[in-house]
Image (cartoon, rainbow, N blue to C red; front, side, top):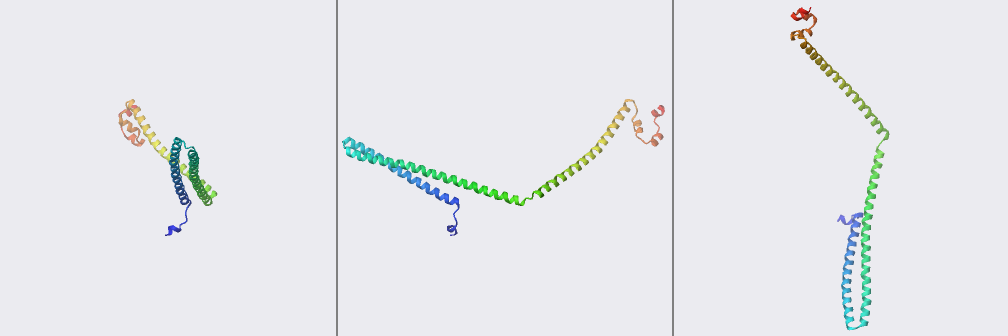
Length: 199
C-alpha cells in the first residue's frame, strides 16, 4: 500500500514514457499495415475498373489511393518522430545521471577538503621523512658494524692461512707453526729442534 504513495523517481518516469512510446510505435505499425492492405485492394479495384472502361470510378479510386498513400507516408514520419523522442529521452536520462555523479563527486571532494588540514598534512609528511632518515642512518650504522666484525674475522683467518702456507713452503713443521702463535713466555720454554738450530 505504501508503494502507491511512493514518490516516483526519474527512472520510473522515463520507464513509463518508454512504455508509452513503444505502445505508440506498435499502434503506428498496425495502422501502416492496414493502410498497405487497403492500398493493394484499391490498386486491384482500379485495375478492375480500368478493364471495364469505367473512367469515373477509376478517378475516384485513384484519388482515394493518393490520400491513402499520403497517410501511409505520414505514419513513417510519425514513427521516426517517436523513435527520435525515445532516443532523446535516453540521452537526457544519461546526462542527468552523469550530472548526478558529478554532483556527488563534487560534494565528496568538498567534504574531504574541509576535513583535510594542509598544515597538518605537511607536518605529518615532514615527520615521516625525518623518522625515515633516522631509521636509514641507524640501519647503515648497524650494517657497517657487522661488516667490520665479519671483515676482521675474515682477515684474521686469511692472514693465518697465508702464514701457514709460507711455513709449509719453507719446510717448517706444524709444531713450529703452533709455536709462532704462542705467547713468548710459553714459546721460550718449548724445545723445537729446528728453531734451536736456527738460533
